[in-house]
Image (cartoon, rainbow, N blue to C red):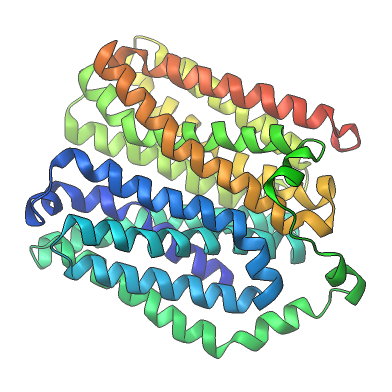
Length: 383
């Protein structure tokens, strides 16, 4: 339950900047376009944290890494709430990204190593729940206190309270890890990026999450723009319809925790990709009445990809590489999240936002191709 709660808090962080920025940029005297720079600083630190997380886990243990992560996020969020300088925000984005990266990779490594498959799916369901709560907190702060700073303070306060809880319950993680044999613990390795990339299936697994992360964020980031500018949907309606995408993502991950008891992780990934393809085809049809079910299907389809690609990591690469490989794959996922959505921003402004479904189709095709190569290299998991 503590890990689930930590993942709710992690999900709360990521949408805050988008919700605050329309009023935030004028407060700090920044250009509206520089939100992407702050996001890139956060993402860059997150990628670096994912790469080095295995070394931190091996040296300090999961409980200490979680405490450091939630503490960094809490302090950085409070820093955001009192900052009036764009440069200071960039500096604060670095510890925020480190906290996010260590929490994300550390929790995935811990749960895949110690818990059954359904818990991996539920873990990501709690992240999606947090991602739904975060904008609500920011909206509450804007309405009740007339400032974006209140939203950052409230979410930062949640993290600092969790820091106290994690520190008080450090023995829980030591007992949870006690079931590992000394031999298994001694086998844990922290190889470099070059060595990891040479492992069979490492690159295609990482590229699958690269496309999955980019497609998920591109859908959420540009979906409303496509609905309003190309399909003629009213802005407030488009915002509500995009909430259905995230609703499908959240509900799908909780339901996936039960479904994975019956299906393999490969079957879960294929089911998700099929639903995404169906949803994308429905969205591309020239009937606005079908947009809402199409977005819901897209959310349901996206829900099993992340958790079930990560779920197979210990079996594919061995327990000794589990933490390092999850960090390696998550680093690629965050790279996709960082770079693929801005690429469509360039496509939209130069060619037209009507190409949104085609752009998503290209990303989905890349995801299907790389995941197919991954499962072909591990035929024993191809049931």
